[in-house]
Picture 1 (spheres, one colour):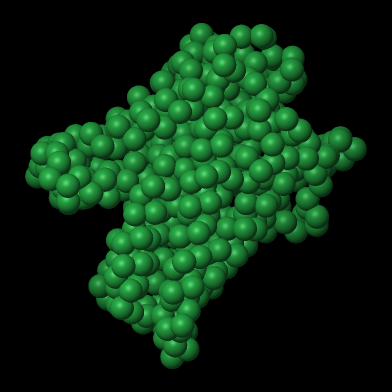
Picture 2 (cartoon, rainbow, N blue to C red; picture 1 turned 180 degrees about the horizontal axis):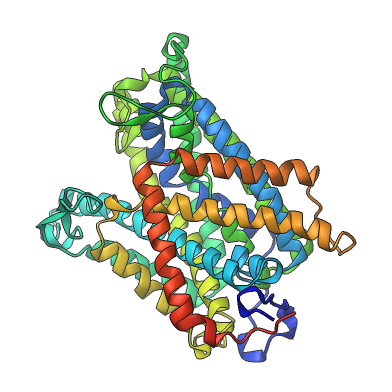
Length: 481
C-alpha cells in the first residue's frame, strides 16, 4: 500500500495499552462547559469591534453566517466523534478515512490553530494582568510584559525589530493552566464550569445594561460596505463576508470537545450533546450581545476598539459596570486557555502514539492525565506567547481551523458512502446538505481571509510537508487497513 494513503485502524480507548489509558471522568455538562469556555472568550469581547469596522451594523449578519457554517461543521464533528470516540479530533478522523498524508496536513493545521489561539489569549490576558499590577504599584519592567515588537511586514521584507522583550505574564498563565490540567481532568473541568458561569453572567449583565439604550437608527444603513469582500480606499478589506471570515475566530472551540472522547464517561451520548449544545448556546449568546452592542452605540464609535463592550458601557454612562465587565473578563479568559491547551495536548498525545513524536511522551500518569505531553505542549505554546510577534500571524489560526472543518465534513460524507450501515450513535440530519454546506462555507470563508493570511497558510503547510517527507513518513507506528 502507498504509505501516503494508508488508513489508520481506530483502537478503542479501553483497548489501548494500560500506560496510554486516560481516566473517564467527564459527563456532558463538563463538555458543554468546555465548549462554551473555548468559544466564548476574546472573540465576543474584542472581535465585535473588528467586525463592526469591516461590516457596520450588518456585523449581526456576519455573526449569523459564521455561526451557521460552524453549526454545519459541529454536526459533522458530532457524527464523527461518536463513530470514532478516540482522541485526536480531525487528525484521527482524517487518518482513518482519508489517509496518512491528509491526516498529517490536518494535524499540522490543528497545531497552528491551537498554538496560536492559546498564545494569543495568553498575550491578551497578559495585557490585562500587567495593567492591573501597575495599578497596585507592582508593575513589571516593560520589556518583561511583551514579546519582541516589530514594524513592517514579513511578506515585503520590511520587518524590523524595534524593541526586544519576553512576555512573562503570558508564560506564567500558560504554566498555571498546564499545571491544572496535569493535576486532573475532572478537577480542571469543575473549575472551568465555575469560570464559564462567570462569563455568562458577565455578558448577561452587559445586555441588561445596554438594552435600555437601544436605538434602531444605529442600524441604518444596515450594510454600508456590501456583502462580499472588497478593498476599500484605505487598503482595508471590508464587507459582510470579510467580517465573517475574522469573526469566525469567535465561534470555533467546540472541536476541542472531540479531543475529550477517551475521557468521556458515555461518549455515544455526551459528545454529541457537548458539541451541538455548546454551538447552539454560543450562537444565541453572540447574536443577542451583538444586537445590544450595535443598538446601544453607533458602530463607528467602537469599531476596532480593543475593549468594545467596556467602551460602549462607558459611552452610555456606565463606567462602574464597564470595570466589572473588564475584571470578570480577565478572571474568565483562562477558560479559553484551558480548553485549547487541553485540545492541543490530546492531539500531540495521539501524534506521539502514532510515532510522529517519541512514543514515551504518550505515557499516562497515575492520575490518568498525559503529564509528559502536557509539559511539552506548554513549553511549545509558551515560546509563541513569549517570543513571537503574534500580531503578524494570529489570523493564521482561522485558516488552520477551516482546513480541519473541511476535512471532518469530507470524512463524514465519504463514510456515508463507504460504510452506510456502520453504527452512528449520532446521525447528522440532512447529512449531504450539512456536509456540503460546511465544506463550501469554509472554502468561502477561507477565500474571504486577507491574502497575506492565505499565503502564510500555504507556507506553513509547505513546511509541514517537508517535515513529513524528511522525518514523519518513516516513523509511523499505526495499524493500517
